[in-house]
Length: 358
Ligand code: IPM
Ligand code: MG
Image (cartoon, rainbow, N blue to C red):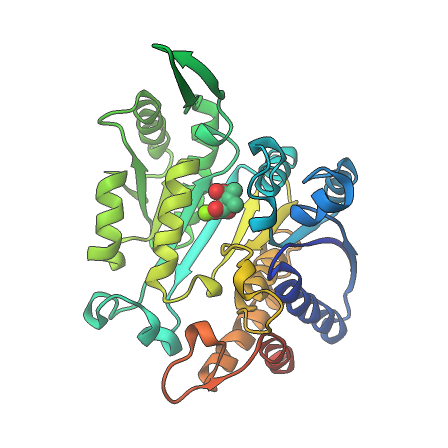
């Protein structure tokens, strides 16, 4: 089979970690006889430097014409003082909206080999943590009206949170479906004690629940959810929430697993096309030093195989290779501990590539 994959290396450590992920894709192609046609395009700060825009039209059309998009990370101090709509991050929001990718899946899993890396006490994570955060990605306050105005003679700024029932229903459906394939527990997170948009969210999720009688649905306020994630993370299976709450809670959930450098994500819409990226940022302070952890980027490839390309066997090969390398004691510096062997970005990529088995 032939697959078109667009690669957006981006900024900071993006190019280094994506290079390792691309190495894995090529090796899978060789081992399994697939033809992966990889095409690079510009997005983020590098696109601003080259074209003036964080998301050039050409990049969006190349992405639209492909089967899947693999992204490194975008942003950096160099572009921090640009106006909001011209920052690298605007490119990321533009691509999510432009490709209609409303569902963001962010798994947070503790690998047995990395149990010591969790900052939480051993008994709190004893039976393992396996949470899937389903974050709404193309609505809410990220895309609502915003602006500046003068009120009471003072400069003021506003952002608005708005959701309609269709937006809530489709993300809730994604979450219920995911829960059906897992432990069948869904927690919907909102702030319905204060926000009207959250009250509509809660009503809509509750209505949909009647179509999924096997799923145990509960609702939780976001402040409580932030607390419960630290107090007892094992209580969670699938969490569904809005764009901004999901942004915050997915960072929190990721840290429970020990390193944000380990976690991948998928952004999906109504079709097969998806965007796959590590949940960590561009980490400009460690860029170019061969110390970044490429595992989140490599696990993003596994998600891409699974969700966009329908290659489940290949997805498992990648996940098993990562686990095998961790079990052999190799670590990048962010997850290293006593008695393990610290390796750089490139070496970690090579080890995982070599560990791929059909
Ligand atoms: C993320 C990031 C982005 C977001 C930023 C870079 C715009 O934090 O993917 O979680 O807030 O969505
Ligand atoms: Mg974030």
